[in-house]
Length: 559
Image 1 (cartoon, helix red, strand yellow):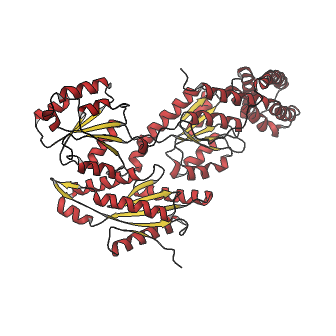
Image 2: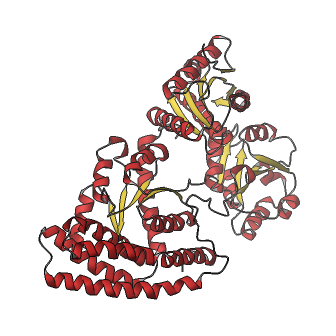
Image 3: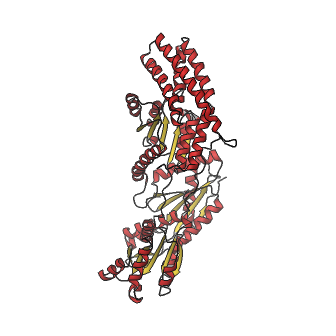
């Protein structure tokens, strides 16, 4: 069954009609180029070959099978001639003339599709239009029910969960719990195990409720005791996890994420490279409707710039383009260390295995042949990116916190500064340092210190936007790139997070303590280069430390 809706298919059909409408113009260019070749101008054969290749590839994509086959026959005849570097024989010229006549007939036949376009049809395509029906944001769907039959036992936990941005709802009776509608994978209930013994029939009622909700109801138990009997009761009542009080909030948040699948995968980012606007539009649209982000380049000379600014996860490139072939472009990309790990997939009408292998040896990872079903294109791209993400995660992320490591955080900062220069938007860079962290390690041990860092990392992820970029700068230092943000807003949000963090309860062997952080902020508006922005934020952080800690300082532009 197709993954494309009827509405999307209608839009793709409209693009096919647009292709048909432009056939006369394409055919005229091909005939002009062919006339030069048929009159003995060898220098025009490369242009003739490229035009025919483009027509064949687009024809295959948009369903013009016969036209594509004829164009492919001409292309292979010309390719053999180019490869041999010989002269076209009279029989070759006659064959080309015959094929051109057949091609013209097919173009006239394809023109009939123009009449199928409705009077109000819009042929214009927006390559970077947003995908419709985006899923709700985390803040719209984070709901935790606290079954608090003792009225007050979960007050501390409630405060800790709300620090992380969760919505908490108190429930005091099973009747209330049983009447809640709309249970789904984004909701969860936390229950004190004392309810299992103090409320008659609690174990059976919970198990029945969970079964009736088809296991969409997720239950986490918290207990003062840690013995086999109480754990068995919790399992029989449908418990999905079990925590011993006092609860380590970071581990509880991880469990909530796992049980509710609250972490959403970032959309795949594809760079489409093709000098044919129709092909670019078609493939970009198919990928966008599958939930992917697309960047496009119609000139190979601009590809490196797009790679630097957009950092796509895969490159979908045509084999034949004027001035630079797909294989040559792949070789150029592979010679630059920053782009070595980006997969390159060729998409072409070319079905010669030898040519395909030559292209892959030049630096490609895969070769897809046109025409390709939309589902197959989406599947091939998705599978390749998913494998690449797994490898890249290990290379780019800090092993303790899962945030970007130092090197990749600085690369992202450089990239976002370039983007801000181009789009004239504001960004701020925040440097964060845990106050007196050495004392935490010395007093409570390094394992507890690691938990403090993981808790701060999770808090930053929860309270900042998905578009913001967060990394571990080193040791107990973190960095955050706040996009489309001025210093006033950056200072306000970082102060909120600082206050939240200072109220988080940290535990070590049931001993409770608190930790704070200091923060320095610098704005691209005042410090226009990545290194200057970084240094300014670092100076502001130092000032925050020197003037009392547990505060946020904004860097002032030096005169």
